[in-house]
Image (cartoon, rainbow, N blue to C red; front, side, top):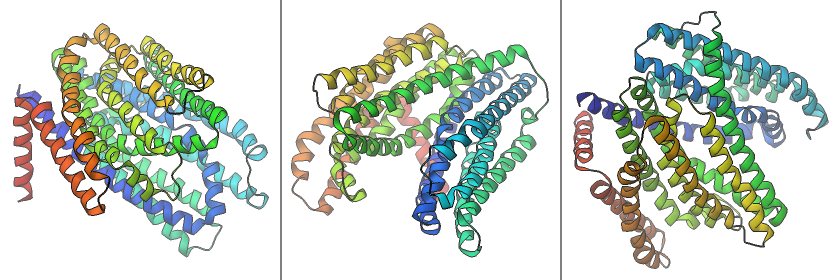
Length: 512
């Protein structure tokens, strides 16, 4: 019982640290982007982003690889097997180096050909673009081999160090932009060199800290065919699942473009940016509880893991609901303040995509529990099939002249089918009861929606339409307070309320 309380405190503390990291990163990144544009100018800024697009292209590889490495490290940590930890780390490093080299070869052949023959880059900047491309490739390789060290820190739940290193990286990127003001050289090339240098500095920060603090983070040159097969198999199916998701998302964008033109694509882009910003809050929370779910599974504490899945699932929904309801309530104000021109359908798309995100937030702890088993092949296949239906159904409905909003009606309905698939595999692989999940996770969230949604629609919204900005802010604050009260008394049980009270009092005492 005491262990469980300690775990909850750690999750709460780690969540706060990750939120602090996110807020600092958002502020620094927004300001850095503005200064970079000012220093490089529109043309060079555009060239850099086109060339550096390869980083975004391989971004999903890093996410999938990080999940795979963390999974195997967390399992051995849960078992308390120090010798096996080092073997897992070393084999993961071998795999990352191998993937990095494959990407470098691909980039230096097809990528280089594509850069020089297909991209629309001004002729006078082509030499600079080729130099930038080389530094981008180095950057990609550094970030790939950084993943095992990053995974060790996250697996050990050192979120404070993770937050600190991330903030240092953001500040270094800000400083390098100011260096550009004082050095008289081709600023596009210099910027790419400095960005590569920052990546190298960050790599050594993770390397020295991890190798000094954790025995497993000492790379040993060896090869284990069975372990390679396990890690690469898990990683491969994770990548397949992410490719399927990316293919479906881009496919829906293309179908929307065919039937309704670029205006819908602009609305979809805005919608994804809004949803991405909101989802960052939940992702931070899920990063903090992921290691404990996996360690509980490894230690064969299935009941403890099951309870953590129910609690984290419910809390993920509450966190997203608290953050997103004021945005839904003020979506027109938010979009009009943020954008000079608001594409048609943007507001409606944003609202529906946020509702879809509620179901995803609710079901993500189930995914982590399934990933803990290491058996992800059939799960990824079935989930990919359900997700892919989005593309085919969207095409079918558009062919029947249904409006663009049906993109998100389909997406929202399919989210429940995806939840069903996740419940099936969670029941099969880790014995999580679908009935108990519905009772302990889904229903408390449903009750919160039933209580608060009518208040939003029939009390606040009619009053909100014809008032000035001050009253809109006041109504939003009152609505947020009602949400917090409802979640506290209806969403949480008595033990969770007691834990929240104790944790809040402890923080207040620290501040005093």
